[in-house]
Length: 407
Ligand code: PMP
Image (cartoon, rainbow, N blue to C red; front, side, top):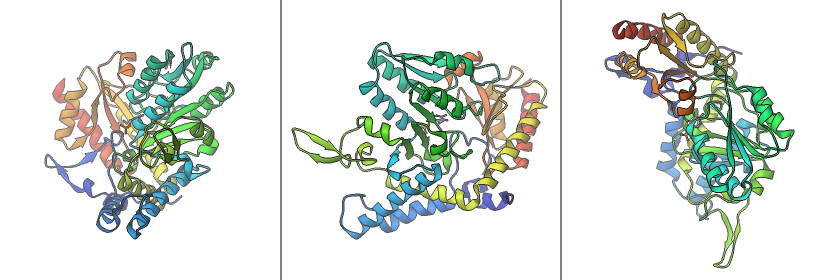
């Protein structure tokens, strides 16, 4: 692969060219949300300036242009994850929305008292709370795969948990807090041996790893557009035809129907059955543009650069006196969490911000994981392909400087 031209890539992201507190911005909060390349911003602008119109409804010209662009974006997403059919790509508001859709439908049709749902100790709140709600409504029990001190799933414990009560397994591909890459292939294979469906939360994987749903074979896979250089308010639920056809609709309304009478409604086919109401048209088109941008920039080169950056960051941070990682998995991507001596993460985050370095501090919507490590929160640097080695050096120097000031 040809190496990534990071300097050229950075020019594609207007927001990176600014100063914060008089310092050049070092944006290391990509796990929370990613920045948008100009082409995505322009695509959305062009939509509103030249063909804004509702989709699937009008015979008029603009409506057809908008519908074509919206459906082309669905094709682009389907191609990116290698979905067998674009009608298995449902546009949602985001990861949270996709998980709620599946959890809600599962609790209404497929969960009852005595059943159980498996999640893991490192889940984001959005892959915990919807399942707690589903269990509360159905009488099912929530079970949690434990982790070791490095932040890796205990696969033996997982295997032992798989019994006939389990009706679904929902786990994250990559931990948003620790960056752990979970062995989702094995998780799915073990569940499928017992005919148990698996939902993969790919919110932190879709932008860093190649995901081929036909190879991986998840029953459901969800992600958010805003973590892959697209706008907020758009996301994707991929599902197998079998499960998407089996699940009842989530919300009722326009577009999700074939015919409506007061006596009975016939639901629309996939994917429209799950897309009630006017969708986020600009968001979907923006997501398509973001994926095309990645493909044109070169995904192998992007991934290789991200791996080099992460390895360098982990190596450099490890040498800081008094620094310990929260999660130090053998296979990792994106996020790096740490604490230095007994310095509170908020204090560290504030001093880094004064140096123009944006990191996230706190529990990262993984409170049970913080409890597991008996800490209130972490400092999290999360990297992506527009970051540079110089920015890692600035982070390391910034952490050292802040430590000196705070100790
Ligand atoms: N799961 C994981 C692993 C995440 O990192 C996030 C976002 N931080 C979510 C779910 C929720 O995504 P969203 O807020 O975009 O719905």
